[in-house]
Length: 107
Image 1 (cartoon, rainbow, N blue to C red):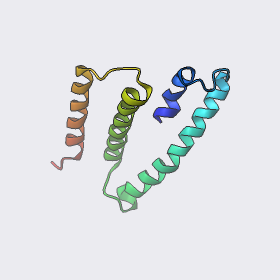
Image 2 (cartoon, helix red, strand yellow; image 1 turned 90 degrees about the vertical axis):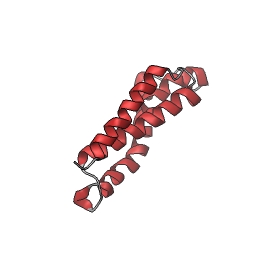
Image 3 (cartoon, rainbow, N blue to C red; image 1 turned 30 degrees about the vertical axis):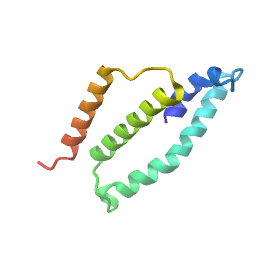
């Protein structure tokens, strides 16, 4: 979803789709998002405990958020090259890792 939501902000920098209308940008983003949904929906279905998988809904959502954050960070720093990774972001990521621990810990 990173490219679907934020990639269009780089079109001017990449010299592509510069004259595309907002409706055109939305359609391009939906096309990119559709590609991700083709993987996300089956992954959630296979991974959910009601379908024989090991995860409940909270765990699936936490996995999705952490994966999205990692992909977003890599894209922002290395592909988009728009922002630098600052210490406060790393602290926030650390707390996300703690959140994963608490969500997956069997108490």
